[in-house]
Length: 343
Image 1 (cartoon, rainbow, N blue to C red):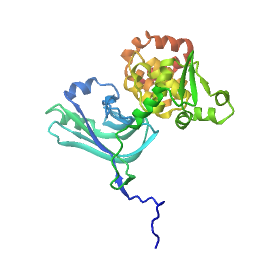
Image 2: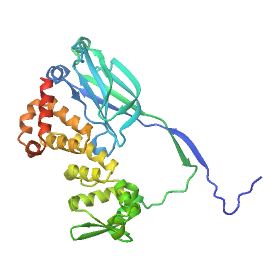
Image 3: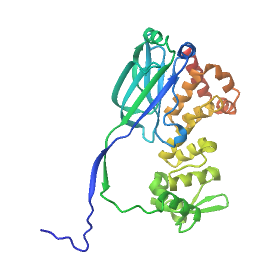
Image 4: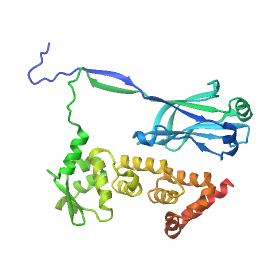
């Protein structure tokens, strides 16, 4: 029988199953007017909302006809934003009237891909739905999502966590400009940073410090092609996993994240850009998706144009469209082909 010595560390762990579940409801009052005026596809608001800070978001997609004709309405659940390209989940999609009488319900267990819907193109007969809406004229669509179970190990009766917060400590470390072993040079400004942190977050920085590149020899990384404000925001994300000024810097920050292979930051910027897609920025979004080979962003921008044909005239007056005409003429062709296919 072994006896623990003074050098033995004994810890008790407990393993349990964890799942995430949430429900969101899409209510459509005055259904008949909405149904008669809607385009081919209509998207629900995002859930959770962009203000929640969640990096995983969903939307429901409703179409009053399917690809084979007008006999059925289609309903899909779509993974709109996620740090990973795929996510396994169970889901339920239920339609109800104003009295919460269930009209139709389906469920599934599948792997979702970004900006790809799962559901049923023959979800409910169109005539049946219209008939059921005559009484109260309100449609309620409820979606329940259950992420897959994960095994989680935790210390049994762990000691209380330190009041110090790792995120704020690392932010202080960056702001304090102390103990750095490499510097980021922007113009005449030198920012002391830490190789281990940069390399652990970015494969690009890791390659710089591992090989006999100038950055490793001089311990200086010179950045000339990114604005100082964007570099500051990128470093803040590297140290804290948070962004402060994504509203004003989303496109530039996306480009910087792609340059330094910061996949989490790319996902955050993409989520913000697509959540705020409009006639004013759709051309810039299309350029961004094309330049950085982001097929999801590009397809969503083209989809926005095709579903908002009335806004297309306004799009052509934006600075982004003028830039697109001058340096990305092939995108003009793609945009008009998309519009033509919807006519």
